[in-house]
Amino acid sequence: MSRVRYVTSIERLGRQEGFEQGLQQGLQQGLQQGLQQGLQQGQMQATQEVVLEAIATRFGSVSDDVLAAVQHAESREALHTLLRQAMTCPTLEALREVLRST
Image 1: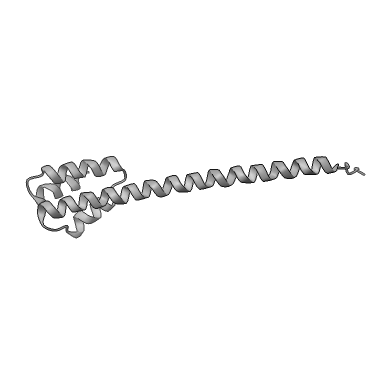
Image 2: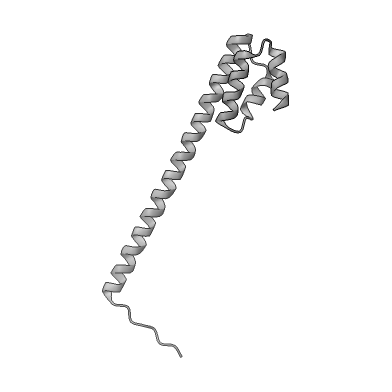
């Protein structure tokens, strides 16, 4: 038969403080990660909007296939590349060729 060790009130208080401190650190870490992800998503959306605005301004409209290609870009760097292409491609068809090749 095993004996249950007596836990003093000071030990209980220490455990409680440790638990609360760990919980607080976990919450802060989760909040920081959530904010970082939200910021990254917002930056991606803003960059997509800039690319789409450049395409619409340059070529008059944004077709569904071009819209889908911009929305499926996986990084801001890829979107910046698309923006440069949108500004330098001579025609919408040339831009479509670039989008198909990426």
